[in-house]
Length: 96
Length: 532
Image (cartoon, rainbow over all chains, first blue to last red; front, side, top):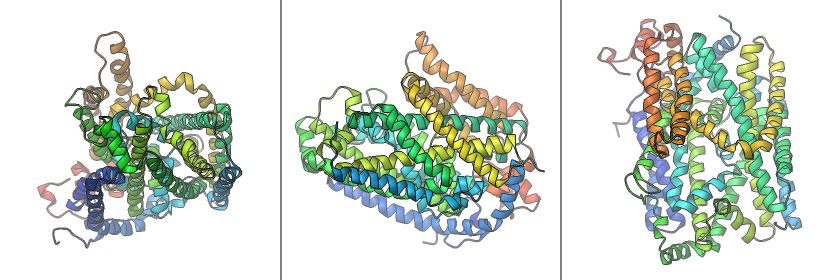
């Protein structure tokens, strides 16, 4: 699916892109499906299993979409983290 | 009163020892630095803070609350618990931004996002409010355990409040957040397994899934199986507009920081994760577990309804899940059940003891009283703060009957009117500290007027909660938006620094262009055409 970007440079991953927006839409829907699907599945209602299954499939899809980007962000950011932490301590200690 | 056999007491004592020792074992790690005492050194894999999110938000009063709404509204009642879905978007938006800021606490984040006097006022205010709020939550949850033990064993309520909170304080004092998160892991696993076992057992007692469905049908109560059985657009006990308001508050709230009271403990878990990715997954999966747990409880409570359909007193049907467990589980399993209740109780108490102490130590003591304090000294201040919170919680707990109504109101006014400003501070560069500060003050006055004073004097009718929310949001905006535009934007140097570090979402174009001009971020392709 070429519409979804799965190889990211650090600079590209820092921007908010359609992969993020797609995740914002799918993620609440997964919560809804998991919650209602679990309740109705416990009552052994067929549409409960359907909803729960849809929730699991969407969850896998969401991870497929967003995980490469999160990995790229994390790898790049951890390099800069030490400097940022030093700056944070300066603010807490009122240092310029 | 419940009778415990030897095997029951064995489970309880074994689990209490396991939980306490598990926490104390991490004493050496907890004392290394303030970052270890409050954030476990920022090095946890996603599944540890995830179980901590789940365990912290599973308290002794949670099944009481879920039982109440499901008994009253059927499966529709599950939507009352869906407010935690703010994590759906937050996990990939505000969590990412907050983790990159590296702030120890939400109060500290205010001084990274804003600058000058306004930022410092916000930091002091949020820190003080969080110390108070955590003490209150500790008293509230501790007293819920006190009432449960009074129901089970006939103990005076203060006995369980003091006994279990003190046990918990032992490992929080020793190992700080290391103790919290490691105990939360085994407490979360124990609690989830027991919730599954007990709920399935309770469904069986009620006749199994088919039995519950057919009995509800015979009683003319089949609507209880439908989570979308609305009572109309605006009328009845479950109107569509309430549902839509809840969805907006929960889902859109994920773009902000502090749109839910639960943000504050989650913020600590976010910063304790070792990477941005771990932070995102921890918040998302911990909340998914919470929603699945609510469904398990929901169906068990439907089972309780078919067994006891005519209970009128709220205090009685709110005990549904506990009542079924303690009355119908066999000898030996009752003790396991109670051990799981102790687990969920300790996990909540430990989290709030450490969280409240983090605000007292990092934001109040370190930043305002002794900026040059050593790491060793800060760890000790963390321990003293933990102890103060513990003692404060005993005082709040003993006052709870008298002050509950006041404090529920206080929580409402602290949350409703700052929902939108808490999003704006994340997504809009021009929103400044004075705008955010004024929204807190405006909300304080408006909520008193709209929720209490005006209805009391019959100047306006009693409004449903969803309407109160929208009115307070609009009236609050009429105050904080003019204040924002009448005061200066934040210092551009601070905004650029924050932007480069956190890469916020939303309307940040002037700041982004300045950061590009300074060569601090890569030029965006097609930047001239616009973008965020």
